[in-house]
Length: 186
Image (tube, rainbow, N blue to C red; front, side, top):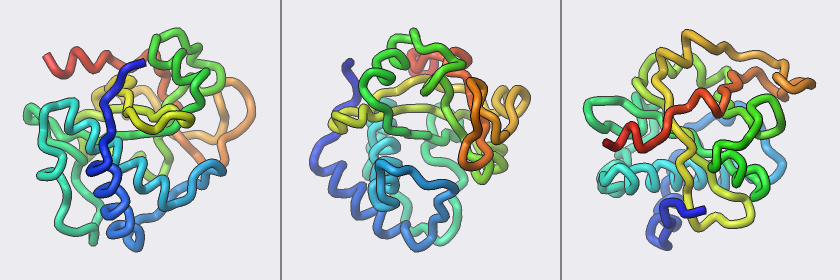
């Protein structure tokens, strides 16, 4: 599984930006395997790596301040892009990245929390990516989708498609509904 390499400079800057933004961000849910600081860093690393993938200088994409919610993460080909990055255990990451994951089983969906759902109207595209939990040295793009498609076809809910409930409302986007990143970077 080859992805976008994370170097020490990116990792150090993600930590700095995470600390700068921390007092202004509201985390909509908790995860047991990451602290809020680690989640902030993962988010920035995803944005930096996505910039690198799109041949954008990630350093020039860093905001001056975090006093307000941004209008988008990346501007690319006249499109406002939001980048969603998650961490996934290796055995699921492999299935996600090879397109063999079942949408209706564990890790088969990409989640957008209800608290972030209304922000989608500000973006044209959402790019989904992941870090393999056991190996955080590469960011892997999963795919992308136009926000209009997401808003027209999904809505946040507590119920998981494979049974049970999420800890907070989230739109559970089928991985199979995502378009290949190669289609975006033609």
